[in-house]
Image (tube, rainbow, N blue to C red; front, side):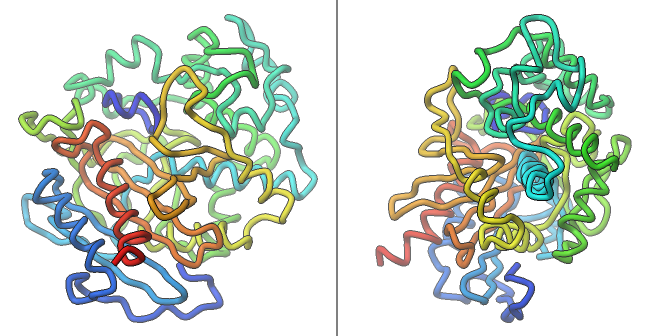
Length: 399
């Protein structure tokens, strides 16, 4: 998630291991005393913070628990189901970073290759020099490349109710890059830190350049097929809906803590502005499977794992990020009261999610809300997710 998410600009901001047989899933978290604190946090997200609905899946040493609160569809009262799909926002970045690190392990590129080497002339002018920016700096947000969502025109057209007029506008990846470098560099490459979706648009283009395949195909071939992620995919630019079972997604198009703002259904939109940075669709179960495999060392060799988990401190940059967090290569960590968890969060209009777990992936929680606010919380759903993480990973230890 990034600063643009916190201002409501509609830019993508913002399983058990395959060898293990999943345990039976509880139909209602309230009947599972081991997760009583987490279920209470889910309930409070609806009753206190005013979210339409929230769902979570926990995997811990081979067992699986599923809980929910509120409604997946406020018009019908439909409840969430484990197979419901949603837009995962910036968790897309973890898939892209993992693909690039796999390509490095295959000897097809290196993290210290320049952007110019792979995308000649694309990042040039207005103070930019692609020959001085590396793939690593794209992935850990130290490139200095401005977020395309910072462009004044984009912000004007996609903030507030203007989003309703532009929600189906389509962009090509190169258009997004052009918008990003139309804003002066935020700092010299490697000298600071700032979250930028433009970094991952470029990273995804490098995946395509290095493989000769579309990003969607690489996501499918490298992750969806081998891990049996049957509900995970990157949609086409004109695929404005969500394929398969899903609920509805709602936005207040404004500050995340104002209970008086009207609510809009924003389920359908063009995902093209999130290419490589926030456009993918998945489920809590698929995200659990992916992150358990990643954290468990099944997707990357040891050398690439070390690179991915070399963390940067977001507080050193010109803008803030999630409190008590650090960022590696497409992976984040959050310091809780009882320790640290690793994973990634994602946000796009109407859909926010978190997937975080222990460093070995044996204990993991994936959660999602179908609204982009939380009454009374400046950080919106981030505050809700933090309470969930504390309840699941620290609550039982404290009791």
